[in-house]
Length: 589
Ligand code: GLY
Image (cartoon, rainbow, N blue to C red; front, side, top):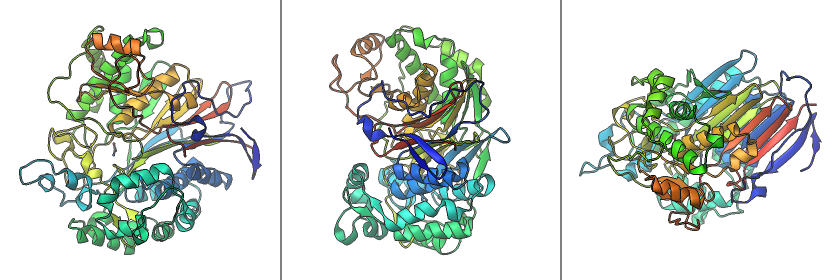
């Protein structure tokens, strides 16, 4: 670790996730700015940012040094991620951000989720046999919802930031114009999606210039995206949703056979919603309400688990109870959750301690509850798709931001002339009731598409606050996001620090398929045997000593920051599974 003084801020410590390699060391290092406080301090001793790309973290740090607050920094981080992680999120996608305004003490959930175009009725996504047309749901013009991220950036900058968009978008504009080196994950993801992306001239021109596909180490430049960002900086909402960019977006979708209208773009609006709040042990948890499914599921799972002493429990017993809580929460996700502006979500019931107590009573401590019903489909790894960053600034403002274009490189469709890669978020709707989507989760009427409706998400930016600590955490990972955030909360509750939480091995259950999927090291061979004896089915990595027979994949890209108020230190944790992520702590002058 090295210490650098820069424009009045000391970068007390830094860490790239690369230092940890791809495996999952539980004994990961903490990143800390040290200094003991005599009494509990009112403000953090500096700022901390954790994101999935070092250039984005650096942009946020620069904006803070220029006098911006956490919300300005978030705009800068988000925009740079849109440029350097086209694989995960971008102006053509959406985001769900959780803000804490230190001055007013308010927590605000900003919903910049995509909306359904009016023409995208459920029938559009069925083939001639009445089956879900997966290609249409996941690729190309029909898969794309009306983007929300540009409006979200403008909204946060104008309402909560103190710097102009011209300043906070400047790093993203520069990187889009000058380029950045393609990294392995980005090149590999392109290879996976190239067949689809090659269908569209705008995508071919950007990702396979002169027929040569991007490769690791190439400098990747996006001059058209730089101009689109400049228009957003100059004209705000109208720079994207009206005028030239809007015309080019509509033209691109419609030229490929889709049906977007100018009115739909111009009508897009960000929503501010009341976050979900509940207690878990000493923690106040503040998290994502619908249109995310994450907060309700977290409230259910953690309130089911509340009375158990998980720390003291044998491993198999702990995993059994956590999995049973996951199973029950994901079942409810399937039936009840959708856009609250269109359907009545029974949020008060689902998040009540009494409901959790009922679910807890249904858990047999010695036996798995079979999920029975329909068999599901395996859930693919989603760590490259979607991204998350976490920020705490020196005033105590906080941002937890998760944003996405859905699957790898979204719809694969870049609108010519704009540099904007459109999302394929329509697949997050229940396009055919009871048919699993790309993440193996399904839904029914509550999440059916309707004109202007937002598709159900799993994005779960979350705050935790106890007398001793303030934490921001979140991650990509499709339907696994929620269980990763759950395990992160349990990790903090166990006393782990930010980097340890980011590195924590993961396991997941989502009701259907009725399987516990586990990363290497997440479930010991002995515990696995005991879980099987209780009736659980486990997908363990093939190299696990006792009967591992699943895939050896890892998932997630968790970015978390914490302010330890007792020691008055800031800590950042960047997921070691992603070698280009970075957490950075800046000490106040
Ligand atoms: N597209 C992934 C999610 O929002 O859950």
